[in-house]
Each structure stands twice: as C-alpha cells, then as structure tokens.
Image (cartoon, rainbow, N blue to C red; front, side):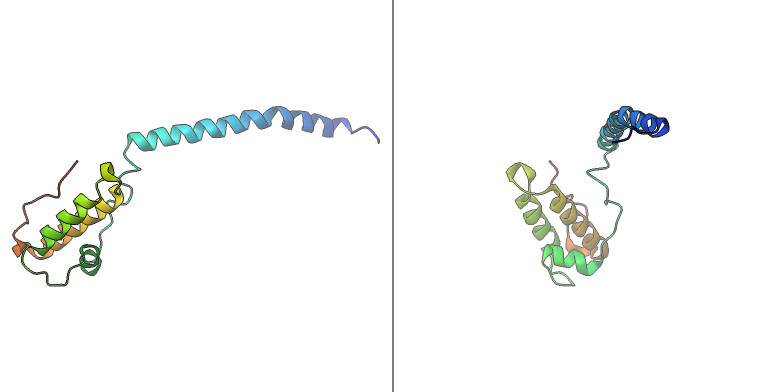
Length: 121
C-alpha cells in the first residue's frame, strides 16, 4: 500500500485530535443547558401558558357542560388528589386538572368554588 500524501495525513491527525475535544464540548454544553433549564423551571412549566378549550376542560374532569352545582370543584379535587406524585401519580395530570378547573370556574363562576384553589403539595 502506498503512503498517504502529507496533506491527507495531516488532516487525519487533526481529526483524530479534535474529535474527543469537540465531543466533550458538546456533552458539557448539553449538561449546562439542562442545569439552566432546571434553574429556570422550564421542565415543570414548559406548556403552562397554553390554554385549553372548554370542551377539553370538561372532558378532563369528566363532566357535562353546563356543570351541575359543585361538580367542578368536587371532580377536580378528587382527580387532583388521586394523582398525587407521592402516591405514584402524575404532576402533569395534576397541572392539567388544575387548569381545567380554573377554566371551568372562570366560565361558570356560580359553581360555588371560584375562590377555592386546588390542593397544593
């Protein structure tokens, strides 16, 4: 086999030296991005600003529109407590239930629980 031209050999040496350096830089940048995201609360509330429709809120709480008196608060409390992360539940579902409750109480303030907040941890 013929020896490689000096230019190609030099390029291969530079690539061999640079690859681990660039790889470590990408890993460090990813770690720093995760630290920044956690510090800014991006994981927990990434989609919190999104609104849901009235129909979606009713489906989440499994109630009909217009709701019966007290249904919104009763159903939201039951589902919220059943999804407690300490009991193996989901924080994501809790946030969806809380948003559904707020939307329904905003539209139907006569439900008697407009001032009540969903239980917080």
